[in-house]
Image (cartoon, rainbow over all chains, first blue to last red; front, side):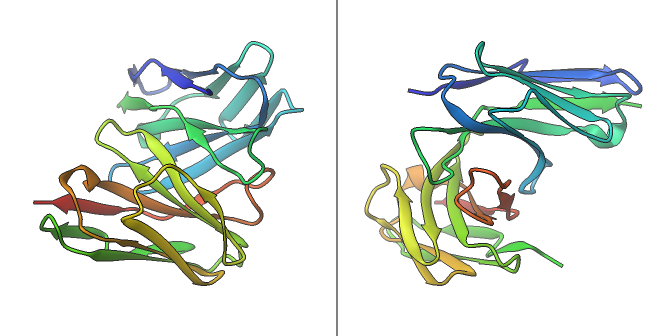
Length: 114
Length: 114
């Protein structure tokens, strides 16, 4: 059974520091891994999607890496800003399911202080 | 323009009642999903429809019944509400069954059972 874990559960950094968020999964048989952002009272916003054949994806200040063999993904956010404060969730799509069923971690709550 | 919209945003009702949550997407996507986020913030898939056909049906009490009148709408009806149904319910959509395209989420419906 796939389990997705995110460490740490919460993180507070001063503005300007780089953020490093970790996601691990127990079954390496995945189609893809997605990183989402969730703001309080809001839905999820997809940040990056990494296919199982890819090693990383980049979008602006965001970079996500994927090491499928070790069951790990890392989301880097460069030069953090107060607007980056949110909960970040990772989710994997298992190969045992072809219909897009995502399995989520519990998230990392990030606070960036001015 | 709201891509995935859910109504109502908040729903407070008594145990034993029947209620419905509506979801509409204007992205032209083929696939829609319902997720439940419990008090511990874990997001779990409940149902998925592809072109109005049910493709994912997780272990959910049969008091929950999804209905897709067309591929732009996926509603969730809940009978005989119980205290444990209190959660945030998210609707999502994707272009195809999720393998290569990110899922787009609504803002959630916060259901509270008294």
